[in-house]
Image (cartoon, rainbow, N blue to C red; front, side):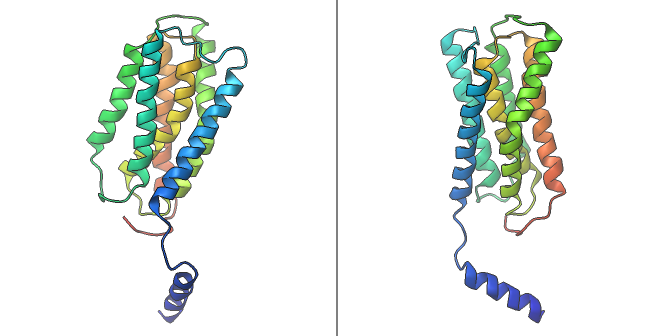
Length: 204
């Protein structure tokens, strides 16, 4: 007990004030922005905005994804409620998915397998850094599955946003398997990994 008390007092003396929670959210969002910009520049070497749906539809769905990305980061990292209802996160994710399918162009620009695997791989690669950072930040508080799910959907949404504006394929099956499935799978991976990582603190 004395050793624990001594270590606690030493840590408290080194950092008497907690880091504001909004700094973590800001760092995460800036990372999203950088990764998204770099990703779009890399995949868009031969054309960035290749989604052939009407421009107002592309912009509207993109804004909805951006709102989901930002909202997921806030739900995952902001203090306040100890537990967010799963239905809130599921409703937001479902809204984003339905908007993408409803706003599809219907164009089949590439062979199904080639296009789907290409988009799936791109989304996974673009999600590695945001997802890793989100997991690190989540470990600063107690593990809560819904918060981990929200942060996972948020971080994986960066790659999905890049694909939304860049990908020329707008068929429903391509969007479901190449864009939405990896997004949801990565969110599930985030929950799985976070459940096995130690928490550095147990604050709510």
